[in-house]
Length: 220
Image 1 (cartoon, rainbow, N blue to C red):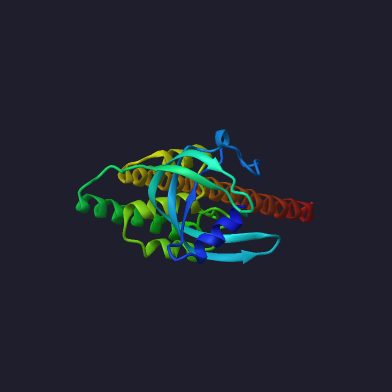
Image 2: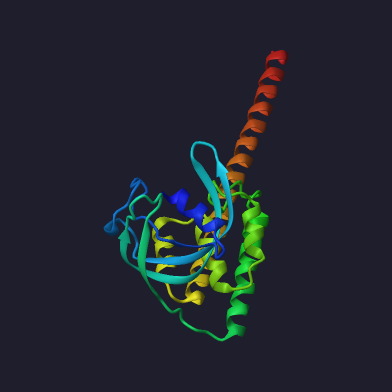
Protein backbone atom coordinates (compact mmCIF):
# COMPACT_ATOMS: atom_id res chain seq x y z
CA UNK A 1 0.00 0.00 0.00
CA UNK A 2 2.80 2.43 0.85
CA UNK A 3 4.67 1.69 -2.38
CA UNK A 4 1.49 2.19 -4.42
CA UNK A 5 0.81 5.49 -2.66
CA UNK A 6 4.32 6.83 -3.30
CA UNK A 7 4.24 5.68 -6.93
CA UNK A 8 0.85 7.32 -7.54
CA UNK A 9 2.05 10.54 -5.92
CA UNK A 10 5.26 10.55 -7.99
CA UNK A 11 3.33 10.08 -11.24
CA UNK A 12 0.75 12.74 -10.41
CA UNK A 13 1.10 16.37 -11.52
CA UNK A 14 1.42 17.66 -7.96
CA UNK A 15 3.69 14.78 -6.79
CA UNK A 16 2.13 15.24 -3.36
CA UNK A 17 1.42 12.71 -0.67
CA UNK A 18 0.91 12.53 3.10
CA UNK A 19 3.37 10.78 5.38
CA UNK A 20 2.85 9.69 8.99
CA UNK A 21 5.32 7.88 11.20
CA UNK A 22 4.50 4.45 12.59
CA UNK A 23 4.86 4.00 16.33
CA UNK A 24 5.96 0.39 15.78
CA UNK A 25 7.98 -0.75 12.77
CA UNK A 26 6.54 -4.26 12.78
CA UNK A 27 3.00 -3.06 11.95
CA UNK A 28 2.55 -3.75 8.22
CA UNK A 29 -0.86 -2.06 8.10
CA UNK A 30 -0.95 0.30 11.10
CA UNK A 31 -4.29 1.38 12.49
CA UNK A 32 -5.12 4.96 13.44
CA UNK A 33 -3.90 4.41 17.02
CA UNK A 34 -0.57 3.06 15.74
CA UNK A 35 0.45 6.26 13.93
CA UNK A 36 2.01 9.49 15.13
CA UNK A 37 -0.80 12.01 14.70
CA UNK A 38 1.41 14.78 13.29
CA UNK A 39 2.63 14.12 9.76
CA UNK A 40 3.70 16.04 6.67
CA UNK A 41 2.45 16.82 3.21
CA UNK A 42 5.39 16.12 0.96
CA UNK A 43 6.53 16.08 -2.65
CA UNK A 44 8.02 12.86 -3.99
CA UNK A 45 11.23 14.13 -5.62
CA UNK A 46 12.58 10.77 -6.69
CA UNK A 47 11.12 7.27 -6.92
CA UNK A 48 13.00 4.09 -7.85
CA UNK A 49 11.65 0.54 -7.91
CA UNK A 50 13.84 -2.01 -6.14
CA UNK A 51 13.89 -5.79 -5.85
CA UNK A 52 11.55 -7.80 -3.62
CA UNK A 53 8.62 -5.43 -4.01
CA UNK A 54 10.40 -2.45 -2.42
CA UNK A 55 11.13 1.09 -3.55
CA UNK A 56 13.51 3.93 -2.78
CA UNK A 57 12.10 7.44 -2.47
CA UNK A 58 13.36 10.91 -1.74
CA UNK A 59 10.62 13.12 -0.38
CA UNK A 60 10.56 16.74 0.72
CA UNK A 61 8.01 17.75 3.34
CA UNK A 62 6.63 21.26 3.29
CA UNK A 63 3.50 21.39 5.49
CA UNK A 64 2.64 19.82 8.83
CA UNK A 65 -0.74 18.07 9.06
CA UNK A 66 -2.81 16.46 11.80
CA UNK A 67 -4.27 13.01 11.17
CA UNK A 68 -8.03 12.94 11.78
CA UNK A 69 -9.03 9.60 10.26
CA UNK A 70 -7.87 6.85 7.89
CA UNK A 71 -10.01 5.62 4.99
CA UNK A 72 -9.77 2.40 2.98
CA UNK A 73 -11.44 3.12 -0.40
CA UNK A 74 -12.83 -0.02 -2.02
CA UNK A 75 -10.69 -1.22 -4.91
CA UNK A 76 -7.81 1.16 -4.10
CA UNK A 77 -4.22 -0.06 -3.70
CA UNK A 78 -3.54 2.48 -1.00
CA UNK A 79 -5.31 4.21 1.87
CA UNK A 80 -6.38 7.83 2.09
CA UNK A 81 -6.63 10.09 5.11
CA UNK A 82 -8.62 13.02 6.37
CA UNK A 83 -6.22 15.63 7.70
CA UNK A 84 -6.10 19.14 9.14
CA UNK A 85 -3.46 21.58 7.87
CA UNK A 86 -1.24 22.98 10.61
CA UNK A 87 0.50 26.36 10.51
CA UNK A 88 4.19 26.60 11.27
CA UNK A 89 5.75 29.19 13.52
CA UNK A 90 6.75 32.21 11.41
CA UNK A 91 10.24 33.66 11.73
CA UNK A 92 12.23 36.45 10.10
CA UNK A 93 13.67 35.20 6.80
CA UNK A 94 17.19 36.38 7.68
CA UNK A 95 17.08 34.30 10.86
CA UNK A 96 15.90 31.26 8.90
CA UNK A 97 18.68 31.63 6.33
CA UNK A 98 21.27 32.13 9.07
CA UNK A 99 20.22 28.87 10.72
CA UNK A 100 20.10 27.12 7.34
CA UNK A 101 23.72 28.11 6.73
CA UNK A 102 24.74 26.86 10.18
CA UNK A 103 22.86 23.60 9.66
CA UNK A 104 24.59 22.99 6.33
CA UNK A 105 27.95 23.68 8.01
CA UNK A 106 27.22 21.02 10.65
CA UNK A 107 26.13 18.64 7.91
CA UNK A 108 29.27 19.33 5.88
CA UNK A 109 31.51 18.70 8.88
CA UNK A 110 29.79 15.39 9.65
CA UNK A 111 30.00 14.36 6.01
CA UNK A 112 33.69 15.21 5.64
CA UNK A 113 34.69 13.36 8.80
CA UNK A 114 32.45 10.30 8.62
CA UNK A 115 35.14 8.18 6.93
CA UNK A 116 37.74 9.21 9.50
CA UNK A 117 35.33 8.18 12.27
CA UNK A 118 34.65 4.85 10.53
CA UNK A 119 30.90 5.54 10.92
CA UNK A 120 28.05 6.76 8.75
CA UNK A 121 25.88 9.56 10.03
CA UNK A 122 23.05 8.72 7.64
CA UNK A 123 20.69 5.77 7.70
CA UNK A 124 22.39 2.74 6.14
CA UNK A 125 19.72 2.49 3.42
CA UNK A 126 20.26 6.07 2.17
CA UNK A 127 22.44 6.57 -0.95
CA UNK A 128 25.14 9.23 -0.60
CA UNK A 129 23.70 11.34 -3.43
CA UNK A 130 20.55 12.01 -1.35
CA UNK A 131 22.62 14.38 0.79
CA UNK A 132 23.54 16.33 -2.36
CA UNK A 133 19.84 16.62 -3.22
CA UNK A 134 19.11 18.07 0.22
CA UNK A 135 21.92 20.63 -0.16
CA UNK A 136 20.12 22.07 -3.18
CA UNK A 137 17.08 23.02 -1.07
CA UNK A 138 16.82 26.63 0.10
CA UNK A 139 13.93 26.39 2.56
CA UNK A 140 14.87 25.55 6.17
CA UNK A 141 11.60 23.73 6.82
CA UNK A 142 12.05 21.48 3.77
CA UNK A 143 15.69 20.81 4.68
CA UNK A 144 14.88 19.75 8.24
CA UNK A 145 12.12 17.42 7.05
CA UNK A 146 14.39 15.86 4.43
CA UNK A 147 17.20 15.35 6.95
CA UNK A 148 14.76 13.81 9.41
CA UNK A 149 14.16 10.94 7.01
CA UNK A 150 17.78 10.28 5.99
CA UNK A 151 19.86 10.90 9.13
CA UNK A 152 20.59 8.07 11.54
CA UNK A 153 18.41 9.36 14.39
CA UNK A 154 16.70 7.44 17.17
CA UNK A 155 12.91 7.02 17.09
CA UNK A 156 12.24 9.55 19.88
CA UNK A 157 14.22 12.28 18.08
CA UNK A 158 12.43 11.61 14.78
CA UNK A 159 9.05 11.81 16.50
CA UNK A 160 10.09 15.07 18.15
CA UNK A 161 11.10 16.52 14.78
CA UNK A 162 7.91 15.42 13.06
CA UNK A 163 5.74 16.87 15.83
CA UNK A 164 7.46 20.27 15.93
CA UNK A 165 5.76 23.16 14.11
CA UNK A 166 8.83 25.39 14.49
CA UNK A 167 11.48 25.06 11.72
CA UNK A 168 14.10 26.75 13.92
CA UNK A 169 13.45 24.26 16.70
CA UNK A 170 13.77 21.38 14.23
CA UNK A 171 17.01 22.82 12.83
CA UNK A 172 18.51 23.14 16.31
CA UNK A 173 17.48 19.58 17.23
CA UNK A 174 19.22 18.28 14.10
CA UNK A 175 22.31 20.44 14.69
CA UNK A 176 22.46 19.15 18.26
CA UNK A 177 22.17 15.57 16.99
CA UNK A 178 24.92 16.13 14.38
CA UNK A 179 27.21 17.82 16.90
CA UNK A 180 26.51 15.07 19.44
CA UNK A 181 27.28 12.47 16.81
CA UNK A 182 30.50 14.28 15.89
CA UNK A 183 31.62 14.51 19.51
CA UNK A 184 30.74 10.88 20.25
CA UNK A 185 32.41 9.67 17.06
CA UNK A 186 35.58 11.64 17.80
CA UNK A 187 35.72 10.20 21.32
CA UNK A 188 35.19 6.68 19.97
CA UNK A 189 37.89 7.28 17.37
CA UNK A 190 40.32 8.45 20.07
CA UNK A 191 39.60 5.33 22.12
CA UNK A 192 40.25 3.16 19.04
CA UNK A 193 43.52 4.99 18.33
CA UNK A 194 44.63 4.69 21.95
CA UNK A 195 43.83 0.96 21.93
CA UNK A 196 45.73 0.51 18.66
CA UNK A 197 48.76 2.44 19.98
CA UNK A 198 48.70 0.40 23.19
CA UNK A 199 48.54 -2.83 21.21
CA UNK A 200 51.38 -1.73 18.94
CA UNK A 201 53.43 -0.69 21.98
CA UNK A 202 52.81 -4.03 23.67
CA UNK A 203 53.76 -5.84 20.46
CA UNK A 204 57.02 -3.85 20.25
CA UNK A 205 57.80 -4.60 23.90
CA UNK A 206 57.06 -8.28 23.34
CA UNK A 207 59.34 -8.36 20.27
CA UNK A 208 62.19 -6.63 22.15
CA UNK A 209 61.79 -8.95 25.12
CA UNK A 210 61.96 -11.96 22.83
CA UNK A 211 65.11 -10.58 21.21
CA UNK A 212 66.67 -9.96 24.63
CA UNK A 213 65.76 -13.49 25.76
CA UNK A 214 67.35 -14.94 22.60
CA UNK A 215 70.54 -12.91 23.14
CA UNK A 216 70.78 -14.06 26.76
CA UNK A 217 70.27 -17.65 25.61
CA UNK A 218 73.08 -17.33 23.05
CA UNK A 219 75.41 -15.82 25.66
CA UNK A 220 74.62 -18.67 28.02
